Image (cartoon, rainbow, N blue to C red; front, side):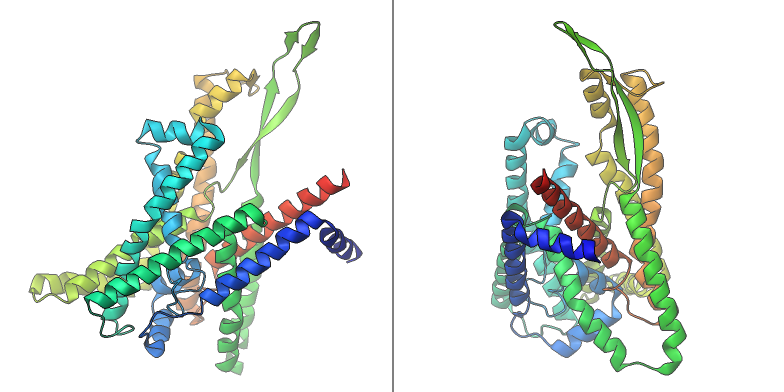
Length: 423
């Protein structure tokens, strides 16, 4: 306890770190204030019922930073920007010039790459905003929208999404940690008191064993998230000895850390984006007079209402996207080339193609464990809700994964800053 108090004192005495903390607090206050401004004409009762009974919208509300729960001008959250970033990274696999810009042109190339992601965010925000408004108007949440109403609402939603993207970048530049993650984190934390109060309001003494089991499972999930998030496979690396002038340099050994979960929560976000399309298609076809269209709409609706089938498809998508995103962000061939250029090698493995094959097999094995873990984390709230009747989307696996990851990142960054101050 004394160590913790001393660390807090040192944290506040560091003027640079103190200023960054103040910036984070102020930006989060602005974010929560904007998230309370609703889109005009919202039926709050229907919106609450929809979020409570639809697992997709409940999960999407987590990634909107809680903006969807009030249908605020920030209802899309940072989703469009995250989707744009994912699409740009996927394009690096198909467009060599983008790959060169992102990986080889240094800081200037990454600035250009980020700028393209910002431009792509605008049409994505407009498309997602229109899709959600169409879905919600069909559900009676926003009744009576005409063409001008759609245009006005979409314009406000796109502006809110771009504003939130700008706030996230300010947090990354002048605050602590990743700004986008902090915004999602703030939305999750802000929704916790509401969910606890709802649970207390409907409390029944017969639910005590279920609640205790739920709390115990939550502790196990937190422990699992911490373990998997911090888990690394350390690959031994040895540098060859080189003669420079009259000195012999090199010959030392180090480690190449490979994370068990390299993709983070990105596959879950991408899977949620894909699962938006069945909702859109079902809503669109339900309004048509064709018997075939009505039949397809009913089939899609049954799929979306089936928790187990929905969870299975969700699990498969998260698993596949984990492999896909890891393949985009980690290039074994490039890693093997860099090691060879720097005179480094893995003991027992020949440099070049053999190193590439070794790293590929190793990353594939690690990704399998990380993908299964992410899939379980993604569907855990749905399974818990089916078995216990407790709506745990905001307090479930995905939310805990984000919260724990952000907290661990903040702890590491503040410790690094305090260590720098000591030295």
